[in-house]
Length: 427
Image 1 (spheres, rainbow, N blue to C red):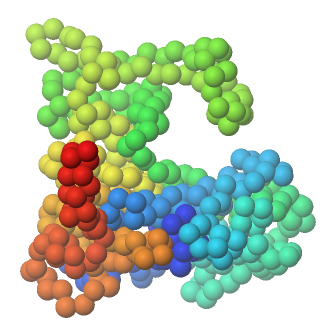
Image 2: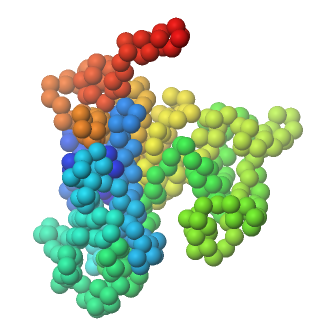
């Protein structure tokens, strides 16, 4: 599980910012489902980010996804001379030419035993190359080196075998971990598989990839499909008795119209891409198949979230969802969070939200609530409720937020807007 991660000079993040999943407040019997204890540390399962539009609340999640993807996939995703898709903080001439930095502290099984131990990974890079990279572990509570990379790679005593091969495979634009996994070294395969299996990337409500992911999972796993049908039914989405999935290959003439990057990804897959058309079977006297496109936004959202919810409650994983509440009724939003908390063991959920009612729902602890503020220089700053002093337990968090106690609210100049619209109307 992830204990904490920090990001510096990436997207809208200028100075180093930290998001922690370590429980700060006391864990009571009422919120025991919020935490998992590993190695004497209490890990939170949730982190919820609030912030005004364009404040950068999604960018901390994007940065996490970017660096983890680079950590495990850079060797085979980038061409040997390919540009790293890194974006520094551009509103400052100095940082625009400086590298980004990322540190993640996580607990995973020791590659030599079944004990869960602490790992610490660090990387510094720009669009051309990795400048610095390191991985440490603590098998008996004492921090030990696995590798450290600067101009060359320094190996820890635990790394034996194909060190020369890994060093030769490690290009300027890929991580040591991804190169080591390519060389099938057990230590680096261990770290690679940990993140590859656990991290699902960002689920964004504005794209169709989630619906495609759920459809593919249901097509491959009939048991999952039955669970999705039951979830829709129990969520009061109608008398749904079945889900019909029809597969269709995308015609070659359509693929030719895609951007080059998409066509390259299709070529790497080695098979023709498939579109899955989904229909929900409603039974009201007789069966009627309704295309998913004609279903309500709430039904589509529940169906799309069903596969990720089932996945993170069945297997340990890290899921990131942007604007979780999009198209969801308050009851269904709370249902999703509660099911995740009660049914998961070593999974974690990071999500962004504008839903202020969640603050007083009793579903979020103070150390799970984070706020993103935009500084005067355009950079994003992140803080938790626990960073603020003098807040009484009985005080409404929603009212404090609305009273601008934590910032992270839109700074709308209504007087200027009124004048603008009056002037426009008069013209």
